[in-house]
Length: 284
Image (tube, rainbow, N blue to C red; front, side):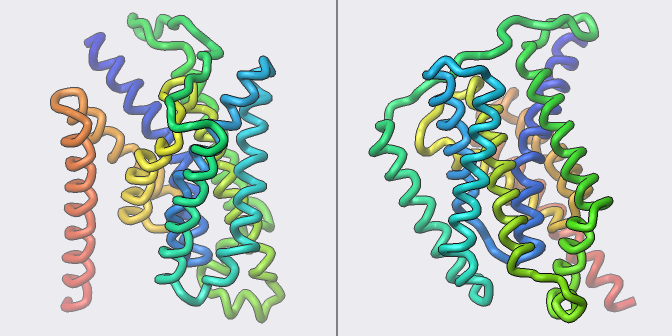
């Protein structure tokens, strides 16, 4: 029973972090139809921002703010300098963001080296929960990720900005005729997506080795979430929970590679079921 509680909390933590990463990716894909292969590097930059602030003995919250600001700034620059020129060519967006990811990794390697770096845990120790001890920082991570996700979902559903995002995602041409300025909206959404990735990087930094290639691991799960759920944010959260559950369980009983393969198999099964359901409706 104790092991089940620990595993359940571990799955919840992984799912919350994955959803925080994936929601921004899903919104930008749904709005702009851009496949951003540099999203993992935004996560990595957030982790390095947290590391730099920790090295300068600044408060942990300053690290979160710095990581979010770095993600926002780099995302804005990327949208203006690169993404804006690739809206009508999804194939080039894949090549462009892939090239950007390589450049960013190389620049980080030049600045910090290839060696692993560590960020001190801001909340060491454990908390007694349901009769078991669980790392206090992981509980804090879950709380922050869930809180930020709730704010993002509320903003997209309840604010004028969210209404414009949904309008452009549904029909960009019609939204333009109604006065929605899609270019500014694209900038805001892409920059916000990068900011969420930067925040996620700062949150995970105390739990992992910070190094230039770290974003690749998180990009795998995020793209699976988008592939399975599309741009529907509620479905994205559910997909992330399912992916994290399968991957964590298989990793616990076997190894990380089989965990990833199991998550990939889950995505394949869901897509096949959806295709058959759509085919059945079309022939009915």
